[in-house]
Length: 113
Image (cartoon, rainbow, N blue to C red):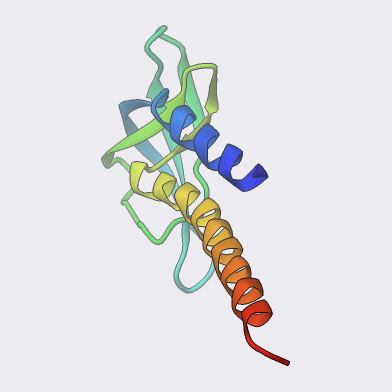
């Protein structure tokens, strides 16, 4: 039940995100496949924000204009829009594991011993 509630929260919270254009001010390598970008953008309230994004496979160049999503209540919670889609992965995996577990329990209890 907790995973279902968390999944619902993520879906509702994701609809509250604001998409804005940001300027990439720095890009650094995290490992062979991921990069950390630092972006600067202006919120809808006019506040200038500079934040590091979570590591991503996306590698923009310094000075590029990119679209980012942020939470109005917490502009520090900023990410590339396509990276936010990963938030749906874990509740989906959790629900899938619960369904497999329930199926296995029912199947195991049906067979004669």
